[in-house]
Length: 143
Ligand code: HEM
Image (cartoon, rainbow, N blue to C red; front, side, top):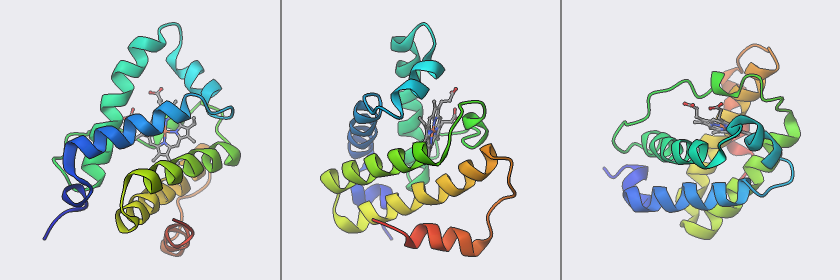
């Protein structure tokens, strides 16, 4: 049985997706200040670490070689994220997915990000983790 990673086109496709997404996210009016703050005084160096990490994250999530080991939820603490940031993030993600991938793969990767959004958003707001129903609603929501 092929993994989602195989179906999207493996490592090269993951690189294209992540780089395409962050090229836009870095310029987005809502998201760019958050990245600028996180990147601090040396954005070149920060992005040179962040992009490969995000490629490893999405490869792992899609069922490819498990090369990401981190704390993806807690990483969003202290960034001042509110609903509008997550809306902007997911809207860009949907755009890039639709441009680069067949609809079934795009929908699956959108659903994974939408579920993560629910978890991260509740975590940064100090709310309890979502119920299984909330996951399903988030996943069914879009794409
Ligand atoms: C909605 C779904 C989202 C997903 C799936 C996601 C995923 C991730 C992952 C996997 C990491 C790496 C964590 C680590 O260091 O190991 C990360 C870090 C980060 N994310 Fe997100 N994220 C989301 C939303 C957002 C939003 C809305 C923003 C706003 C700009 C954002 C900004 C950041 C920043 C700045 C970091 C780096 C934090 C640091 O290292 O200091 N993320 N994200």
